[in-house]
Image (cartoon, rainbow, N blue to C red; front, side, top):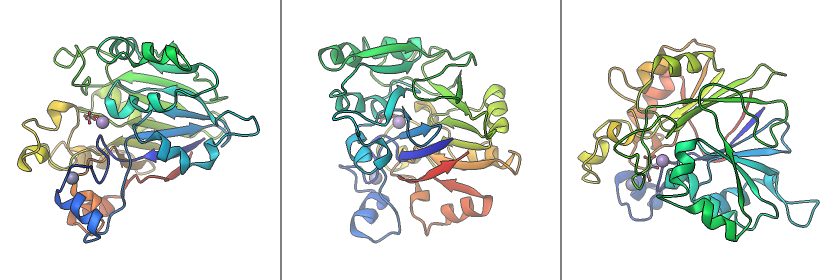
Amino acid sequence: MKIHILGAGAGGGFPQWNCACRNCRGVRDGSITARPRTQSSIAVSPDGTDWILVNASPDILQQLRAFPAAWPGPELRGSGLKSIVLVDGQIDHTTGLYMLREHNRRWPVWATGPVYEDLTRGNPILGLLEHYCGVDWQTLPFDSRPFAPQGSGRLAWHALPLSSAAPPYSPHRNAPSAGDNIGLTVIDPETGGRLFYAPGLAEISPAVRAEMEAADCVLVDGTFWTDDEMIRLGFSTKLGSEIGHMAQSGPGGMIAQLNRLPRRNRRILIHINNTNPILDEASPERALLDAAGIEVAYDGMEITL
Ligand code: MLT
Ligand code: MN
Ligand code: ZN
């Protein structure tokens, strides 16, 4: 299976349009060594021809321009993207659906019941798309039952509920509902390759831990270095953990969790917020990740499993 990182940034991307934090300033004026990153999305393929889009970010058009495998042809209108899977209803994971409205057929969109509810009520984008290409909602089971998004061929997918957070617009924001956020496992029975993907992860439950240990590659929440990162910068009154993202540093943080995985397991952080010091490739925080064998995803990164 092939995995293509379309966007490795968190909501807002890097640099964020209205942000003058050290990282955003630094990447604009070249005073730090860092790559810009678009917002959170990946694509998965069994063969490099048919792709499943996992999350549709507001930056999807820019991401697809840079991704020839998804370009149309030989038909006059078409795409290598065959279906869409959503891990939650967050703005950075769903707004790209608007940009995909010119599709020449209805989009199969896989989402859990609670996410479908949010995308037809709090943010009724799926209903609105009926006036364009239309969407066929596919119920995404999140109890580890297998499902098969269109285009995935032999690949076997399953999902489990995560402790993270529903979007700010959601009626579930302060009353979490199982299935607001999911982690995805994708298995290639031909190669034995196994991916675990969870860009929003507030807590690693025993079930999540088991999925991570079983995977050859984990692509997990890299939003914040410290839990109070946004508070210390004066950008928010909320901790990262309160909005569904566990920090990397500290006891029990993501680094400690990843260090406990079997050595064969490739560990990659994704959904990196623009405030996170690991974006500066010369930072001590980045050196710490390097020493631990933890990678930081970037736009255009390719993984073969
Ligand atoms: C998140 O991951 O917490 C959200 O995508 C934040 C946002 O809406 O920008
Ligand atoms: Mn996000
Ligand atoms: Zn910033």
